[in-house]
Figure (tube, one colour):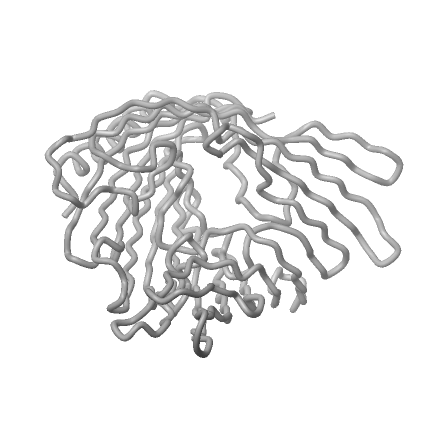
Amino acid sequence: MVPRIALRLVLSLVLIASALRAQDQGKPPQQPQPPTQTSTSPAPKGLQFQVGETTIKLGGYVKVDLIHDFDQIGSRDSFDPRTIPTNDESDPGMATRMHAKSTRLNVDVRGPTSIGPGRAFVEGDFFTDTNSFRIRHAYATVGDWLFGQTWSTFMDEDAMPETLDFESPIAFPLIRQAQIRYTHKLDDEGNYVAVALEDPQSNIITPVVPGDTEEPIPDITARVRWNNEYGHVQLALFAGAARFNPDAGNADNAFLHGFNLSSEVDFCKHDSGMVQITYGPGVGRYRGGITAAPDANGNLDAVEIFGVMGALQHDWTDEWRSTVSYSWGKANLPGGVAATTTESVSYLAANVIWQFCDKAWWGIEYLYGSNETFDDHRGEANRVQIAVRYDF
């Protein structure tokens, strides 16, 4: 059950935003709504140059986060409920942290080719333990083909709620990986079908006998997108395989598959909602979870997972907006996993964001999460995060 502090903080955020909205009545609009994070759309801001027929855009942002934890959690820079301790320790674990790891840089190059428009996009951030630069996206598109590293075809990057937290709601697919994708447009309304071969890297818990884990084939992913006047609906599927090859005996294979049904809907001018439902044996690999594990007899099984995510965003004024999002996921763990393996998680985020100029915003967010393990132990954590971001 979400503790009373969660409900009080969420209510406080709403009341603060309501008061600010009343103060801002009559002010001229200063900032349009933030763009959706679509891997095939240009950065919303940036420095643009034209070289012949080629357009080059440099973009990104600087972001600083101030984080205060009221309880113990293993992920200090992002809010991952799987790292919440469940050992019933009485230490509240209060801690404060500041970092700028989310700062992001990108370059977007577009121009004609002999078979149609071409594009190359590279983006990175500093979200590592050593603050070193890492690649987020590195892909190219020519005609209907995409190749490189970007959001998985199995996920819906247009149904991701806005959070100050880098992790975002836990129970929906969120991963960037190497792939080769083909997209077929169904009409001029933005409806399409896409299929891809993707990197199959998985988290496989091995049986107790000596051996090696393998991913024998690439993941096969597909999505169908339907657009309408209110938003969109997307259905995504995937299939793959995991293998444990013991030093003695035959290889043990597990078939992986699942679906992700998602939607984004604009209810009215100031309100929108998002929902995602994910299910399948092995879908945990699309959020850093367990893909396969041994059962009580030591045989490799795909881990069946069910997850739901819902979010509501309200625009109080042209400058102020809020998002409340919640997600919950549960794994049907086989009997051979450790007792401390995470079985279910929940994640709640509620924020207020002030777009105080066309290139910068300030926000505050309350976060709550829970972690329940295979042996029925449970842990909870509460966090408040403040962030400031400047887009260039």
